[in-house]
Structures are given as structure tokens and as C-alpha cells.
Amino acid sequence: MIHIDRSRVPAPEMLASPNGKGTLERLNNIELMGHNPPEVDKLEFKAYKEDEVRQAVNQLFYGKCAYCESTYLATAPVDVEHYRPKGRIKIGNKKKQGYFWLAAEWDNLLPSCIDCNRARRQEIPFATPPVQTVGKCDQFPIADEKLRANTPGEEANETNVRLLLNPCLDQPEEHLEFIHDPISEAVLVRPQLVNGGAEDAMAKESIRVYALQRKGLVDARRDQYLLIQRDIHQTEKLLNIWIAGPNQPIQQLIDENLQQLDNYREESHIYAGMARQFIDEVILRWKQQYPSYPFP
Image 1 (cartoon, rainbow, N blue to C red):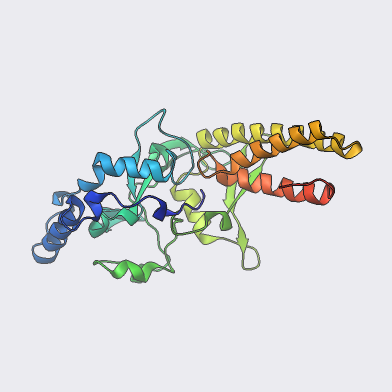
Image 2 (image 1 turned 90 degrees about the vertical axis):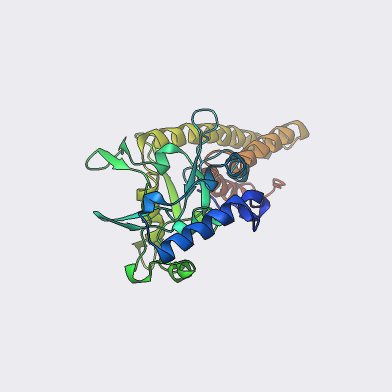
């Protein structure tokens, strides 16, 4: 997961317009809940499903899942996902009314792959039990239930107690850490340590709720990691040759490899969060190890 600037893609007109489907749906639902509360299932949640919205979230996240950074365009339709669930919220074994007034709010909509968004049985490496039902579904944990919003505008009270990372609000790279297990070759994600060794709470809940440790995802990250490591090793070999005898042809090859490594870091690239961590660590080491090389 990486930070994405939502402002680079404007809200779809049908959500932003005062007379658009999103605004009318929102006002209608607020009125229904305020004057004659119906069952949540009877509320209208259609605006977010429009093609214009789907295209906008695809553009904003480059066809990647907002949570796990896997591409979905080649394999499955995107789930236009509500960061704060629209209908119901699952709290332990109980459910309560969701954030129905945010169902058509652009700032609450994110693209998600099926495995991050839906509750599904998944194999979780190194976990007990090894197969678990994971996925966001109706979950939105917060640290203090007394501050949970029940009416429009109250969600501002959750600012400091929400426990799920939002790539458009947060800097996920400051919360998540990737590790490579040399024995299994798995690339796992874990919370960074804060406050004297405690696990970052938002990272811990986000990894659990978004199913970021599921086997299929771990394997996909491993494959990308191995590609990155191949290019890192090739570049280091060239750097050693250049140090022994600097010359322009070798430097050109090194610069081309450095550009390829930088491409892995682009926000449009799959698993850019993982790539940035491993590549940045290597580049820092190289700058110390090869101080005479003109790194960009």
C-alpha cells in the first residue's frame, strides 16, 4: 500500500454535481433515516456502481487494488469499495448501521480486488489456523466505540481513533514494513515498531482486515521481489566493474539499470510499496559503498 493523491483525479460529475445521482441519493437516504428509519437494506446504494465512478477509481489507482497493490484489470472486475462501510458495520459478532450517508461520497470510495474486499477462505502462511476467513467486508475497527459516527458529520470524531489505513489519507509506508524470508522466499508484511517496540496499531489492523498476508498475495510479492533482486545483483556487478575502471559504456548500462529500479518504485507499478523499501535501502548502501559513482 502506498499513498495516492486523490486530487489528481477529480470526483466524477455524477457524484460531485449538486443535482447528480450521488447527491440526490445521499439526501434521500438521510431523509429516510431521519424521519422514518427503514431497514438498511431498503436504502438506495446505486450511484457508486456507475461506470463513471468505476473508471475514475481505476484511473486514480492505475488499475491496482488500493490495499494490496495487485492489478485486477486482467483477471476480475474491480470492487468499488467503501472505506467506511455504507450499509452495516461488523463489530465482533454484532452488526450495526453503517455510514449510509457516505455511500456516494468520492472521498470514501476506493478500488479493491475481491480478495481484499470480500470475506473469503484463504491460506495464511505461518498462521494458526493456516486457513482463515479474511477480507474487509463490513469491518471498520476504531479504537474507541464511543466515538463512532452515527449521523452525518460525526465521522470527524473518528480521525484519531480509526484503525484502517487509507492510502489517500495516510502515508502507509510509515506504518508497514516488508520482510523477505530467505528460506521460504516469502515476502511478508508486518507493522513497524513504535513507542519503544509496540506494533503500529493501524498497520496491524490493516494487515488483518485487508488480508495482506494471504498466500496468493505473498507469492505474488515474492515473484516481484525476485525480479527486483535480479536487477539489483546485475547493477551491483556493473558497479564493481566501473569502480575498477570507470568507462562510459559501463556507466550507461548502470544508469539504464538504475532507471529500471526506479520504474519499480513508480506509483503505477504493482507492489510499489514493497519495491520502494527494498530499493531505497540498496541505493543508500550503494551511495556509501561507491561514493565516486554519479548516482542521480
